Image (cartoon, rainbow, N blue to C red; front, side, top):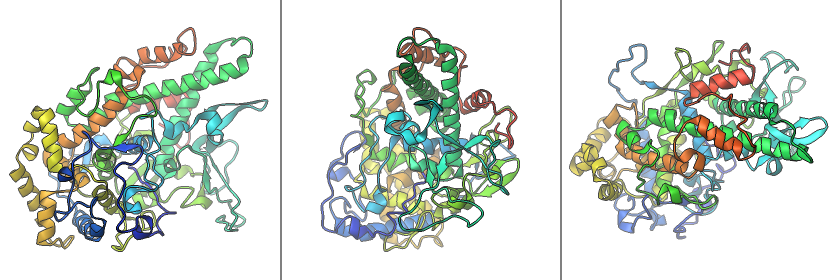
Amino acid sequence: MAVQKVTDASSFRTSELSPRGSNPPATVPGFRHFLGTPAPSQRFRAFGIDPLESPSHHAKLRGLMHRLSRRMDAAIKWPPHQARSAEHWENPFIPSGYTYLLQFIAHDLVHSAIPLSVAGGLGRGTTNARRAPLRLETLYGSGPVGSPHIYALDAPSDDRRTKLRLGRMRWKEKQSATGCPFRDIARTPAENVTGIDRSIAGVRIALTEALVADPRNDDHAVMSQLTTLFALLHNGLVDIIRRHEGNAGPNGQFGAAYKRFLCARGALTAIYHNVIRNDLMRRVIHPAIYASYCGPAPHFIDRFAPTDGPAIGDWEIPFEFSHGAFRFGHAMVRPEYQINDRSLHDLNNTLEKSSVNDPANMPLDETWMVQWSRFFEINGSTPNLSRRIGPHLSDGLGNDQIFPAFDETERVGLLYRDLLGAGLAGMWSVDALIAEIGSRQPHFIATSRLLADRAYRVNQLREWLLSTPAYGALTDEDIETLSNDPPLPFFILFEAMQQTEGLQLGLLGSIIVSEVIFGALASVPQSAGGGSLADQLDLVSREFYLTNLLQEVPEISNMAQLVELTTEIAELQQAVPAFL
C-alpha cells in the first residue's frame, strides 16, 4: 500500500532539501496533529532529544531508524491460526484486495509533492494538497473541465466529457487490437525534449504517460487495475443515468452532460463510502473500536461534533494518521500475487509494472489483467490473502529501484522511509498519546494492558527488540530509547502483533484510524448517517433530477458486490482473461 515513488527527488540529499540549522515550520498546510498540537514535552524523542527542535541531531535519528528498520527485516514467527489452508503469515480474514483499497484511500487523503522522509523535515514540498477527505479526488481530479486529459469525449460530435478515459489491454505477443477490451488505465507516448526514447525499436512505442488524476494510481499493476475497476463502475453509472434521464429540455445537451457526470460521481462516492464503512473498516479495525464508531453518531474525541464538520477546503489530516497509524497497510503486502488464472507474479515484478518504470511494455498485457475473485472473496473464491499486520514488510518493498537510498545511511526500501518520516514530523510520543486518549476515553485504554501498563509496554518492546540480535545491530542505548519512546508506525505494527496476532489493528491504531476515516465520512451529508445505500443514492439523484434515476443500483456494502455490479454493467461476464 501507499507505494510512492520519488524518482525525481531521490537524487537530492537531505541537506540540500532542508539545510541544517534551519528551524522547520510549526505547521504544514493540509496537516495537523491528532488531539491538538503536542507540547514539546509530549513529542517523540530519540535519545532524549526532540528532532523537531534539533536538526543537528538528525544524523543520529537517521542512524537509529536505519538500525530499527534492519531489526524489522527479521521474519515474524506467527502462531498458527484456524484457517488450515492458509500459511501462518497470511491473514485469512483480509483478502489482499483490501491492501490496495487502503492504498487507494491513502491517495484520496494525502497528496504531497515529496515524502517527508526525503524532504528531511517539514516545509518545502510536504504540503498536503487534499482539502476534501474521501471525495474521490484521486480518481476524478478537478473534473472534466479542470482535468480533461483523464476524461473521454462523449461522442464524435460532442466535446463534452462525462466518462473516465480508459485504455485497451494488449496481448503479450502482439500489439493491442481493436477488439481488445478497455481494461487498463489510459496511457500515451510523449515526445521528450531530451531526445530520450524508451521505445522498443520496430516493436512497441513507449507509453510513458499515464492519463490518470493521481500519478500514484499507476504505482504498480494492481493499483492501476484497481483504478480501472473504479473507472469502469463510474462509466457504467453514467450509462444508467443516461438511459433514464429523458429529455433535458432547452440547452439540455450541456446541462444534461454536466448533471450526468455529477450524479454518477455522487453515486460512486456513496458506494465507495458504504464499502469503507461496512466492509473495509470492519475487517481492519479492532472489534471493540469498530463498534464504537460504526454507528450513525459516534463520539469523536479528535474533533467537533460531526454535524458541525469542516467545510470543504478546511479539512486537514493528522500526521499521526498519515505518517503513523495508516502506514500499517505496508505490512499487509504479499511477496507474490496470483493475478489471474494465467499468471503468478512476484512483488518486484508487480511494483515495476508502470508507465514510469516499464513504458515499452505498456499497456498492461493479459498476464496483468486482474481477476477480481483472486483479490476479494467472491462466490466462495479463494483469493490471495494479505499478510498479517506486524513489524515486518515483504522483501519486495526493499526494492532499490523503486525505493532507492536518499541519504547517508544508504538504506533502501519503504520501511526506513516510514520510520524516518515519522521521526521528523514532530508527532505525539506513544506515551503522551496514550495518556491524552486515556484522559478523554479512559475505558478504551483500560481494556489493553499494553496501553494501560507502561512498565509492561516498555518490557514487551525491549524483549522483542532483543529477541533477534543478528538483525539491526541495535546497541543497548538504541534498545532503551526505542523501548521507552518507540516511533508511532513501528508501535502500531507491534501493537497489532501483540494484541490481535496480526489479524487486525490493535486498540491505539484502531482509534487513530477510526477517528480519521469515520470522521471524514461524517463530514459528508449523504454518508454521515450510515443509512442504506438506496436512501443515499435517492438523495444523490434528487439533487440533480426530479426522480431517482439510480433505483436499479443494488445495495452494495462490500467489495465483492462492487466488483459484481461492475462486471455486469461493463458487460465483462465473458471477458478473457476473466474479470470476475
